[in-house]
Length: 370
Ligand SMILES: Nc1ncnc2c1ncn2[C@@H]1O[C@H](COP(=O)(O)OP(=O)(O)O)[C@@H](O)[C@H]1O
Ligand SMILES: [Mg+2]
Image (tube, rainbow, N blue to C red; front, top):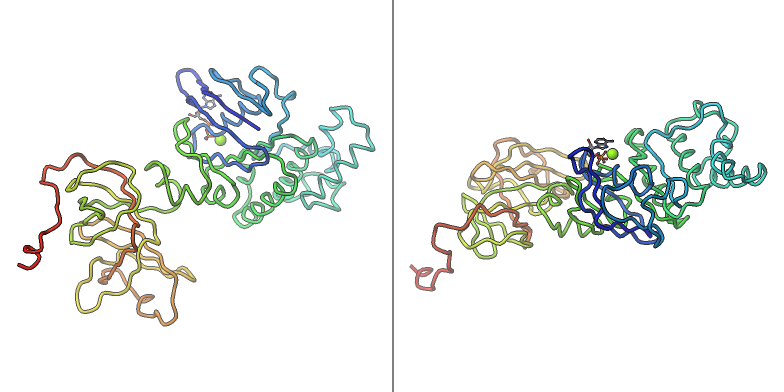
């Protein structure tokens, strides 16, 4: 439905968007996710036609659109600032675009009423925008865009002005709405939870480039780059030594490796990424354990500890609370901890360089016996 081919946008000498390739499917809910300043809005504005690329091609529904003015593209945009007309009532706000297109009064009011029903805003047709809450105003802005039946709806941080609770409710509604209308949504956000909650696929952007484009589960389980690994979900990193299919931390704790983003030789100093669910933990018994509690907290149904490893690296761990786990829930800073990693949990992120030590080889039976 939307394709970007080698799209670059330079402002002065800054490449806000840098040779971007992106294909968005018909009916897809795609999120553009990345830190502030990574080029999300610029990408969206080029698709909308508010900016022209410095280089590259953009296609909508198969047709090249570079040079086509915004109002002639089959896309509509919803912004964080909804910019409703304060002097018009809700129905006329929604019908405004249809009026511009020369649709008759009766027909456009009928279509506007339908669009308002779609966003669950009924009975407020004659209210002025200022009489509605922020969440309701954003629904009006959505209805105003949807009533024009665009092929693609572009949304730039549309929930950014709403409080947390309303935001969560609107995320679910937007997802439902998109499934109902079947329009392709391109949704910009810097909030990873928001992207994970709504999108079919997420394009993770950094410095004007797409680091990875994948469904939410894949981004979390199989991040392609250290940036994606760190940006999606919680991840701690610890330093250690590569030893076969594990990384040995100082103190002897072994992290079993799963995916590897870099090549590293045995014995190399490496860094490994760990998700909070990578291990189980309990108070150490009859000894110091293999880690120490830095902080511990009960998060309702889960327990969270920041575990300090042998050389001071800290790993955030979470586990569900179990019946009768009072001793675990009572963990305090400084307590000894027994941490047990699940299989293949370590993500090999970084290699500090080739090992100077001889490669680690498995001990011979004789060595084990001695
Ligand atoms: N009109 C502009 N003039 C100059 N620089 C701009 C302009 N618009 C955006 N930029 C720059 O381009 C980069 C990307 O901006 P933007 O696309 O707004 O990022 P995001 O939406 O991801 O926060 C930033 O460095 C920003 O300062
Ligand atoms: Mg932006």
